[in-house]
Image (cartoon, rainbow, N blue to C red):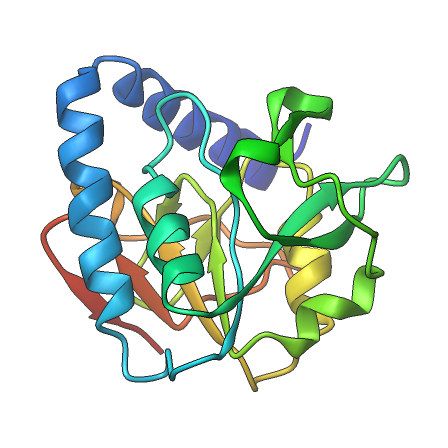
Length: 193
């Protein structure tokens, strides 16, 4: 294992362990705050397309955000994990129709729009474990979002949702790791890069 892979693994383990001590009440309050911050982004114009995800476990919560985006008439795309470790996309119409999928995720039942569909989004809300002030993003290690973001160029705003303590001094980065533009935590919005 390379030094870089070891550094990423240590940081992933540290943040994953810290996430497990958060209470359900704290996660709900944080999800509401995250939604407020994302919805205030000037790049999120009326009726824009937003690529997002459904949070699971102790991830920063996305349900209040998804509900409000749908209520306001945004087109919401959610990832669908493909067998080749890439992301397809499907439109979310109703949170009640989500179904269990691979890796413990939830996905919409609708038509698959293809791997390029993410490039239709004006804002991409990404999951992750950590970020640094230069826009470095640490994901879970599968490279799914790095592949998806590499298809988009600089056009969409890349927004990462984190808990407050997950903005760190430095994230170990590989050449293929895709940066983010904005980090949203329950207490703040950080413009990066």
